[in-house]
Length: 309
Image (tube, rainbow, N blue to C red; front, side):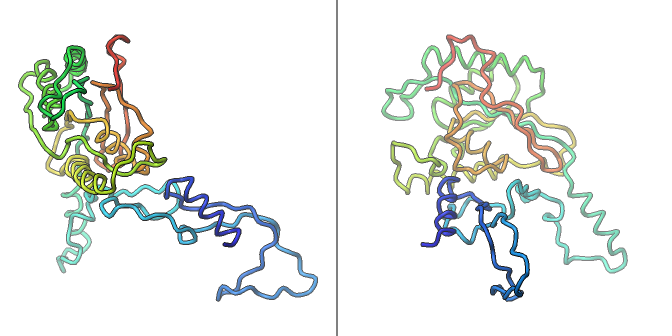
């Protein structure tokens, strides 16, 4: 294996398969012709100065991501403005053109498809629950967990926001957390979904000591990705006012959603830690820009009430 190839593979491993370019210090490099072959330098011509050799992704055999995860192609720092497939140009049939109005018609159709409102997404991790339960219905909230949910509900109510809906996982601990929170937000509609159930979203990098079979990531990952695509996107063009939505679910789901929304490598989800009853706040602008306001906030809880089980 050549030195350059070895360095490219090493960089790929260090970055968990997400390296876009690897800079390798080199000395003299022969000039390249249009066909890619080394050109002969005339006698006495100065040698090229030492520099950096940029190795493109094709030079390294990085493991491919699962099919349900879309990767943005390009250099580091690239932002896919159509990440949610709701960019106005992606919502119209550009082949359908009014011959008389032309570009004027296109501009009108684009304006009709533009989002106008901002979505505020509040991702709540369920409270502490009984770890000894053998099946889901036995994994009910502990007494401390119920107190945590009360504190989270009070915190959300104190924000003075007009919440539109509470969408929650259909697992017992998430439903019980939702019931307690909703007491502090009377009139807010509750919706249950299986998409937000806990699971293993994608094999983490670096790997964890407790191994999970590929089938688990394959099955859970597709479902959790479906939850992301279904719920995390810019506002519909028909939405006139900003919305405030609560999602009560699980740590793995929330961490994966945060990585995907910010277009960070999703394999890094396990590098974050979330407390029980914590609040994570994502903001999605009409332009499709995404900001993370808070991640796993439990500053509203007394220290003796904070857990991460």
